[in-house]
Structures are given as C-alpha cells and as structure tokens.
Amino acid sequence: MNFVIVGTNFISDTLLNAANTLADFNLYGVCSRTTARGHAFLANHPSNKNAKVFTSIEQVCQDHNVDAVYIAAPNSLHKSYALQCLAAGKHVLGEKPAAANSRELQAIITAAQQQQCLYMEAMMTTHLPNFALLQRAMAKIGTPRKFIGQYSQYSSRYDKYKNGERPNTFLPEFANGALVDLGVYPLYLLIALWGAPNSVQASGILLETGVDGAGDVLLNYTDKQAVISYSKISQGDNITEIQGELGRIRIEAVSQLKKVEFIANSGEREVLSQPFEQHFMKYEVAHFMQLVAQNRLESDVNSYQLSARVMQVLDSARAQLGVVYPADTQT
Image 1 (cartoon, rainbow, N blue to C red):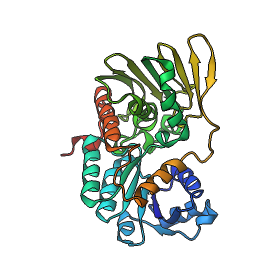
Image 2: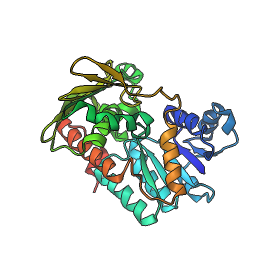
Image 3: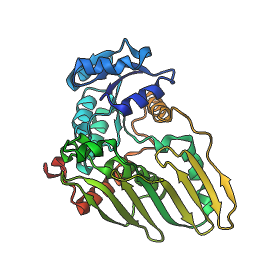
Image 4: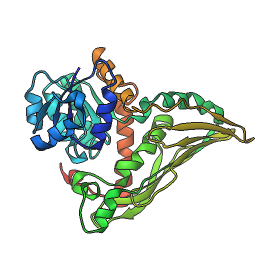
C-alpha cells in the first residue's frame, strides 16, 4: 500500500520505523514544507531513500499512485488536509487529536462517508496487544469505581518558551496545548473502557499565549468517577490506576501500556502485560491497512463514535479552561 507521510517530525520518524516492519507497507512519499526538509527526513531512513518528496498537500492529492496518507501536520491543519485527501479518494490515518474540535471532526467523518474512503484517528494505545489484555482483565477489579489517569512530561520546548521563544506546541493558532497533546492519552483509554461521561469539570494553568500548560479533568459517571491529570510544565511518574471493589489495575506509561499489573485488595500482584514491543506504532498501521484491504470504511477499534466522544470531552474541558482556538470561532 502506497503511503505518503504528511509532516516530517519525530512522530513521523517513529511511525515510519514501525511501519517499515510491515510487509505490505510502502513509503511512496513524504510531504514537507520544503524539499530540503523532506530529503533530510528521508536521509534518516535509508531504506526509504527513493521515496518522493512533496511540498504541498495538493501535490499529494494529484498523484494517482497514492493509496493512503498519514497526517502528522500541526493540529490546526488536520481537518483541511484530511478533507482534501478524502476528496481525492485517499484513505486517511490522522494523528491525534483528529481535529481542532467536534465540528471539524464531524466534517471529516461526513467527507469520509461521502467519498467511501477510510478515515481513522491514529491513537496507537487502543491497538496495542496489551490493551486487549487490559480489557479482559477489567473483570478482576470487580465493580469499577475510580480511574486516575496521569501523563505529565516536562517539555523541552517549555525552556524555549520561558526564554521568550514561541514554539508551536504552546500556540493556540496551531490548536495545541497540554490537554490535546498529553492528556488525551489517558482520556482516550478511559472512554474506550467506560464510554462517555455524564459530566466534565476542568481546571488548569493557562500560559500567556492562551494554551494550557497543565490541568485536571474530572469526569463523573453514574456509579464511578475519573480524573485525568496532565502537564507539559512538570514531570511525573505517570502511573495510571483503575480501581474497583476487588482490587486495582496499575499501568505504567499510559500511552504505550508498558506494564499492566493487577493488585488485589489482599496485596497479591499479577503482571498482566506482555513484553513491550519496540515498534509500538506498527499495530495501528497494520489495522488500518487491513481495513483498507477488506474494503471496510470504519475501524471497530478507533471508531467514529469513540473519536467523537473524546473530542466532546476535549471541547468541554477547553471551554472551561479558557483555551480557544481560531477554529472554535469559525462558522
């Protein structure tokens, strides 16, 4: 399957290294702002050195040899790039968050359905083998009562920010912020397991640029509750717990599910996870390609409903935090 990677950043590097382990994956090209950037990216991947370099999404859409695109451009461009690619008959794997807000996400879903193309949000966590193990293990904790999801990672770009620079990751015009960058990982896991909450309450620390540097989101369910704690301006141990009446499940590194352990109320412990796969992004790409091969137009793992429920929480939390993107005021 001929892929074009749109955006030449570290996440594109990680995905390409993983995708190259799959027999049916072929990097047909990369799309970057300049030819030099595209070639510099390919230089780090010798096995893909003959891939084409595009400098606009229009060029990608006009090439009839392109089967699918992976969009890892800034969040603010996710919608427009996805719509253009879908209109050109390309299948789209769109990096999380799928769009800037729910209205943009719905536009993508509608376009995918109209064009009879596959669109899937590229949230890797739910495709990992350890996620399936986690789902099966939920019965061990008995009646679930509490979900505590944490992802705090001090950003190297924050030092640049404090020195007066304005990196994209801290700018609302790029639809960024700590919640949509880091907090979305435990949030996605939560909603994949528990569904949509009854209510959302959010508080956080706003930077002067208008995006959140850190925060907490409290999600209430009828008989249980969850809190998502995240930060790009401090570092944490990043342990997530799912607590029930019979015990709890402890997760290290929630985005990658590196270690999943059941701890009974008695103190007895059982490691549930399998050894961690280095190329952890290969599973989402393999699933995506399998869907295309089977002519399926929606993932049963990262479904439209799951993406929409996550985005609705992000919208609600951002509104309470006071994080406003340009896309939020567009009609």
